[in-house]
Image 1 (tube, rainbow, N blue to C red):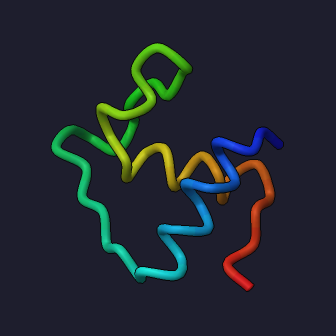
Image 2 (image 1 turned 90 degrees about the horizontal axis):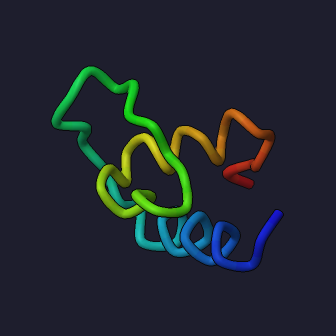
Length: 53
């Protein structure tokens, strides 16, 4: 896991941010567009096994 992804995930958990997707919750999350949809970026973190605990 990259430090950038870990930092984003940790801050999201600590601040209890509730992200919303403006599309169908199926945005492509890659390095070039990762900041376009923070909801899908957060979901991707959970999908790869990052834990909220």
